[in-house]
Each structure stands twice: as structure tokens, then as C-alpha cells.
Image (cartoon, rainbow, N blue to C red; front, side, top):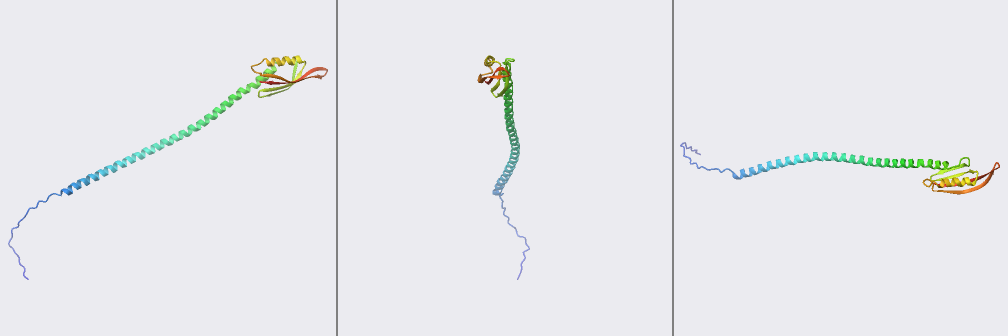
Length: 182
């Protein structure tokens, strides 16, 4: 085997090959970079919107809870208001009826003829009075009934239920029973 070495330099022919920059790579890399930046900005934007919407949701939930509490308080106050109205109406009704019985009694007693009529029993219920007693004569009883009937603003009617002559200690007395409607 023989090895040959050529020690004379040879001229080399060099052909220039111009390399075109890879346009394809540059365009796609620019599009890819634009796409990545756009996606990153969209994700950041979406995340900030989500964060702001979460804050807004929490604030609105707090406001809603406050309104619910206020609504509960308003309902309880309305119930309390109704109870107070009922109490006031009851007090007014009691106050109106409180004086009525006293006025009725005052009218019954004011129209008696002194030393001529004696009441043995007087019952006063709602708008009705029952009177039992003794009188010296029927005339005094008739005058008493007429006096009561003249008070039309308070007394509606006076009814004689019973009247009998009775002798007590050598005196002729009239035992009577009246019903007075107010």
C-alpha cells in the first residue's frame, strides 16, 4: 500500500453561495411571538377582571346582607308597630268605656227624689242597669222614670218590670224593679 502525499497547493475554486435568511422562520417566529404576547396580555386582562369581579361580588354580597338585615328589622318594627297600635286602640276603648259606667250611675243617682225613693239593689252591666227599691208612692216612682226618660242623650229607655204595694212598719210602700237601657 502506498500512500501518496501531494505537497503542492492546489487552487481551490470557491463558489459563493449566498444564504438567504430564512424568511419562513422569521415570519413564523414573529407571528408566534405576537401570539404569545397577545395571549399573555389577554390572560393578564382576564385575571384582573376576575379579581375585580370577585371584589365587586363580595361588596355586593355585603350590601345584600345589610339590606336583608334591614328588611328583617323593618318587618320586626312593623309587627311591633301593629302591636302598639292594638294596645293603643285597646287603651282608647277602655278609656271610653271607663267613664261610661260612672256617667250612667251618676245619671241614675242624680234623678232620684230625695227621701222618696230607696234603692235596695243596683246592678250595672255593659249598657243595662237593673234597679230594685222602695218608694213612698207610685207618683214618685213615675216622676223618677220620667226624669230618666228625659235624658235621651244617655238613656235609651226605662222599663218598669214590677211594682207592688207592700206594707212595712205600718207604712204603705211601693216595691219596684226597673230596667234602664243606655
